[in-house]
Amino acid sequence: MADSWVWWIMTCVISLYFVMLLLDFNKPSKKLMETIDHQESRRREMTTRLVKLQEDIVQIKTRSEDQDLTMEDYEQRRKDLLLEANKRRMIEIPGGQFTMGGSQEDSPDSERPAHPVNVPTCYFDAYPVTNQDYREFVNCTGYKTPIHWQRGSYPTGLARHPVVNVSYHDAKAYAEWMGARLPTEAEWEKAARGTDERLYPWGNRFVDDRCNSNGVVGTTLMVDEYPLGRSPYGVWDMSGNVYEWCDDYYDEDYYKYSPSTNPRGPEGGQERVIRGGFFSETRPNVRTTHRSSAPETHTRENVGFRLAMSSEK
Image (cartoon, rainbow, N blue to C red; front, side):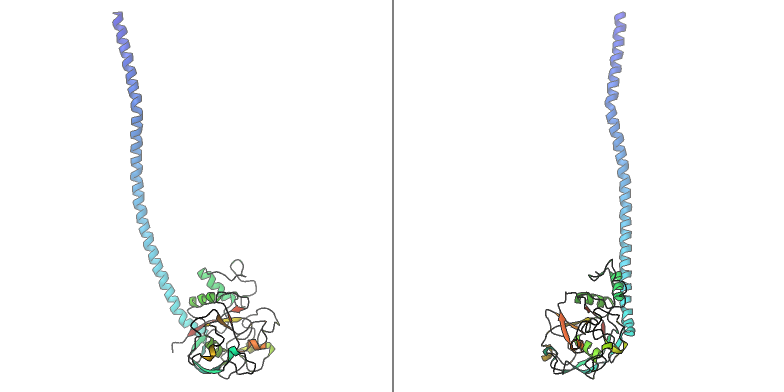
C-alpha cells in the first residue's frame, strides 16, 4: 500500500510539473496572440487615419487650387486696374515728329546726324522710380534688393531719391509688375526736349539750379528737387541726378540707319542705352541728346530708371 501511495504522489507531482511546463510553453504564444491583436487594432486605426489624411489632402489641394485661381484673378484685375491708374499718374507725351540727335558742332558722332523722328503718343512717368517705389515692389514680390540696401530697405532719408544699383533686368521686372515698360530711346528724348530742339529740358542755356550735375552735390537728390528743370511736357529730373535705362540696345552708329518712325534700337547688342547723365557729369553730358550705354546685367550707383506706357490711341 505504501508503494501505491508513493507512485500515486509521484504521478501527481509529475503531472503537475508537465501542466506547469505546458502553461509556461503557452505563455509566449498567448503573448504573441495579444501582440498580434494589438497590432491589428493599430493597423485598422492607422488605415482609418490614412483615409482621413488622404481626404484632408484632397480638400487642401482643392482649396489651394481655388486660392491659386483666386490669386490669378486678383492679379489680372490688378493689371487691368493698373492700365487706367498708370494713365492717370503718368504724363501724356503727344505723338508726332521731332528732331532727334545733336546738331551742335561739339556733338559727338554718337549723336549724329540730327534727324526727324516720328513717335506715337505714349505715357511717361513724371519722376524716376524712387527707393520708396522700389521697396513696395520688393515687399510685394520678394524680389532681390539693390546691393547697397540693408535689412531689406534703402538707407535712411533716401525715400524720394531715385533707386540706383538696379540692372536693366531689375528695371524691366519692376516695369512689368507695374503694368508698364521701359521707354525707347526716341520716346525718352522727345519727353526730355519736346519739338523745339532744346539742348536741356528747360531750354538752350545751362543753368546751375535746374539739375543735379557737375559734382556740386556729389550724390543723388530727391526727384522733385528742381521744379524749374522740368521738360516742355512737365517731366522732372530728365537731366542729371541719375542715368536712366532705356529699352534699346546701344549702337554708336545707330542714327545713321535708324528708321524715321518709332525707332526701337538695333536688333541686338552688348549693352543697353542709358540717358540723362548723372550727378557728376559735366554740362555736355546732361544735354537732352547725350547718349551713353551700360551692360544690361551691370548695376551702378548712378543709374536708375523711369517707366513708360504705350497709348491705346
